[in-house]
Length: 102
Image 1 (cartoon, one colour):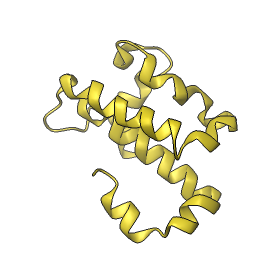
Image 2 (cartoon, rainbow, N blue to C red):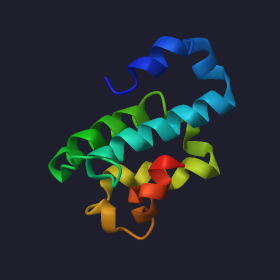
Image 3 (cartoon, helix red, strand yellow):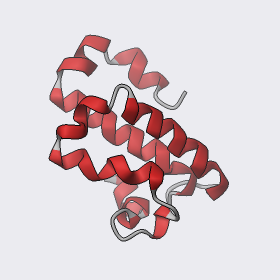
């Protein structure tokens, strides 16, 4: 699992109640959703993007559902449904080397 260390070291109560932890977890899910096609991936494989987006969609429908009312995150809920997301104007910056290392 991509968030194994996060889940091991950040207590569930903190992940559910602390806004900063929720924000960090959301962005971690975004990063791992796009990582198969990300510029910082030493072996990018766009074919894996569909599977990682499915995992992200599951997160959005479960643990991430509560953040759908947060303006900062609202646009990201469309990510699993966007074809050719690496070229989409709303999301192409996520695939830059700068976003992945920020």
